[in-house]
Amino acid sequence: MSSWRPTRGSGFGCLAGGMSTLDSAHRAPAGVAAGIALLLGVASAVASLTGGFSPATIAVAAVGGALSPALAVWALALLYRRPLGLGRASTAVVVGGSLLAFVALTLGRFSFSVGMEEGDRGEARSVFGGLTAQFFLVALLAAVVAALPVARRLLRGGGLPTGLRWILVAVTACAAGPTVLLTMITPQTPPLAAAAALLLVALAGPRAPVAAPARHARPRALAKRVRLLALGSLLFGIVVWGGGLAASIIGEGTPVATSAFGYAAATAQLAAVPLVIAGTLLVAARAAGGAARGGAVVAIVVVATASALMVALYDPASDGYVLLAIVIALGAGCWIGAAAWQLGGSRRAADRAVVTVAAGAVGALLYLATCSFPGGLGLLAVSGCLLLGGRMLMPGRAGPLSPATLPAS
Image (cartoon, rainbow, N blue to C red; front, side, top):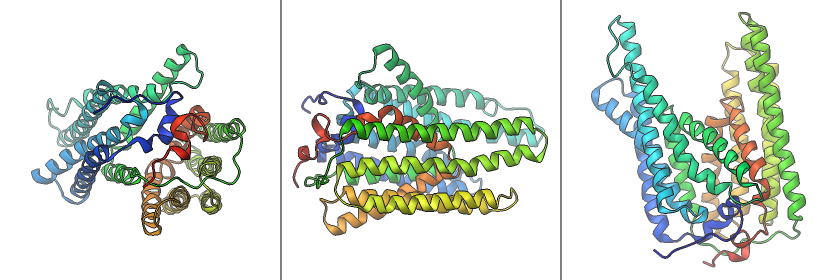
């Protein structure tokens, strides 16, 4: 394989436009890995939720739970290696660290279950049942190590001093690695991650130049607006959850402690609104059309209405929160699908429709698992990344960010 170096500029910039540098040699193994990850993830989820405790179902749940997310990471590493400029050693660290993290996480889950069963039966703790903390510690450390090369490449450039950049790299890796790891602790999440990886492989195919918007915003002004919106979302989420935590501490031992978290989880859903606006600005700056704007209106109305209903109808004993969280995820999926439609203007109508539906469905499921169910906590990570990399995602930056650099079909 010929040597390759990313164009001069930020890691976010190269990532945003570097998909055009991918070829079939990268997409084929990535697609195979993502497809196998999806099959293993679905099998693991079915075995975990319906298979009981037979040795066969436990084996399927364990193997699938560990290998499905690891293969999804491998697929993404193959897909993004060139845009990010990851060398072979860095790619091996990402893939190997992820595999170790997910294997240790799976062992930790089963060790915890064994320890709990032994405790319920009044038996002495076995060696395996007593290693839960050690397995989880290894998983967390391996996840941080796996995230370091990616964080280092994403945060390169941007005019940051070297010392500050390395601090941000360390903080980002320490936050992102365990966050991704913990989202995979439930059996439903790995197949969603694998489906997202498979969708990205499908989106990586060659296409004609995307229609440019009729009028470009100045990159500096656009970057400022995007970062201000991200900052507003981040501060809103921190204030809401900080207030909920403070109220629960003050009202410890009373119903106030429980309701404070419930109201915080409901109100924090509104942190998605400025992020949807910021995302719509970025989409509009890259491709002509109003699909993303229309999807944003729908998403904002859905999020605002559902959040208000969560607060007004809050009842810890009801399923209202779960149902409204699903509604919010559907609103988010509507915007994601609309944005995919606008960005996919160079594709055939049938392909464009398939990508739109797939992006919306996968986006809604991922949003449900990482944002709306956890009370908007996942939005803190999104707003933080957008705040750090907002200026680097602007169109018109060097090299692959220009639509004119995309290859013709």
